[in-house]
Image (cartoon, rainbow, N blue to C red; front, side):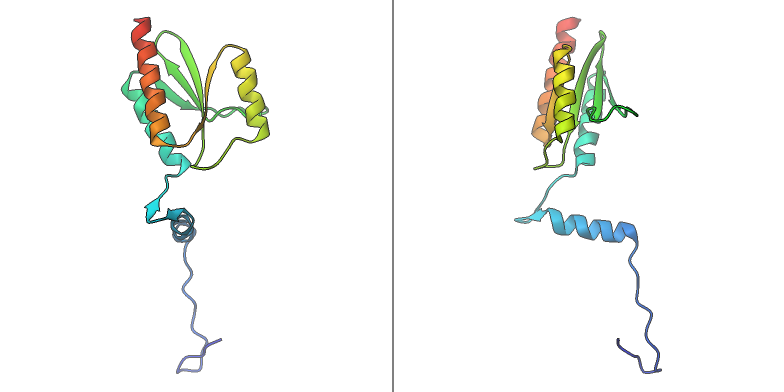
Length: 135
């Protein structure tokens, strides 16, 4: 330990959790000078895109039933879709895959591993087409 000129051990500056989180995020996500998007950023783009075409993109939390997709997409005409969002490079857990299979078997459309702006744009475009087809 370093002792300063007064003979005391200087107090170390402590970083806050948010500072540590930002630093960790920057270190983990810098690859070739490009910062990858976080899951929350992808979620926000999907929510805004679906709202822009007249739908709702609600966060789905189901206490007591694990593995449900992150977002429930509600479109005019009573149409429901589901989306599982992931950070780039991440994949679903086994339980999430099982639940997606159950939902698809029931006739629902489930978008899995939505981890990029391109996939979000594809979903929004597809949902827009479904809305126009049902008008």
